Length: 508
Image 1: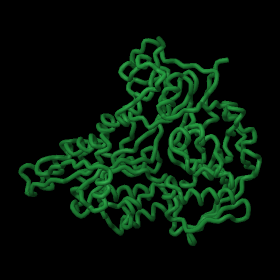
Image 2 (image 1 turned 120 degrees about the horizontal axis):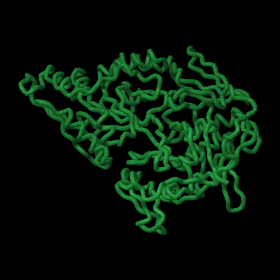
Image 3 (image 1 turned 90 degrees about the vertical axis):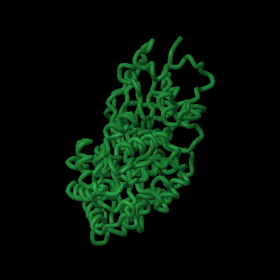
Image 4 (image 1 turned 180 degrees about the horizontal axis):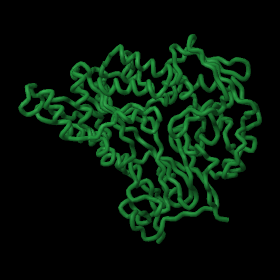
């Protein structure tokens, strides 16, 4: 009997603790995770066409569409003023130049000439402003406009954005996909991307846009769209070779490698996992710094996140050239214990016995396990750390009331690495109420020039004062069939970055 890899067993079982197969597939047709290293038959899929999953009947508006499947398809249809590389570096896209006046905090972005939407109409400043105004009100992008005071079109080819503060990092936030004004309520709004959405009878597919302004030759003239009802169905169709690419936030994929016919490409994200301190109850910066030395980041990344994260000693992704690698320290248990002993917390130390409470959301078994491991590792001598797991509503209430010593948190940072919401004096997520004028100045300095020097200075101060302990940045994955597709360089925003360099092998 043909045996299939059920990708759902690799994702939702780990993420949610449950999985249900499509009703038309027998249970013994699945190749489970434990069998991956020695399958009865090679899991090599070839294809005569290239297909992506899609939720049929759901809108593809990139401002409002759901994450995952719809976002992957929309990445082929829409483009932003800028693009971010896999290392989060800013690249020009629909904008071909801009000026910034640091005296007035005003940007003027000039649109690229010759760019058209799928219907042949020219891209205009009006289209850009309409999309950015919707993005400003959206859940996905609202945080990017925190320092924007106004936006307006200047003629047909320029956009002017005024800021409330000096900020050289705005272009990193403007990879927001632009749609043609007036089509945003359509099921498939018009975009400027490398593919066009085509409906012929009952068949929907993507066709290479011959008028695409970049003039590149797309590796696929046509991309089929395979309607799915949910992620389970999409995973099954990938496992059966009916779709050739699947973006997922898998925690781990035991045994999957190129030998099974499946390629797993890691995607760096801005999702930071961290420990936050209550600056009122843990007011000693030396103690906070010492506790940062007591966490074996590599062990819990490999043990609890199956390697699908990158350990970090700063709240900037290690994938970014701004990440200060010299601030990293090797974990040594004996050095951590010696540092705690020096603070008086050794068995014979002068400090009084103390217990710190680590708050965590109980609805995430993954986070509870991580918190328990960290608490055990930080406990030494007269200092003990206990875990308090609460349901989400009580967890957030405890954060807002300051009823904790430490908490395990996770946040999706904006790609300009703005930390002011987390540790700024008036930060909306500064639950530990940490406040330091020097830190506010350093954050503003980094926003003003976004250089490696200012990034390191900021991160070095954070490492010493330690209002929070960066733990790791999560990574997503893109799954493909090795026999069909190679040379992927996906980004957090799109699996199709560098599309023109793909190597696609289809059988006739």
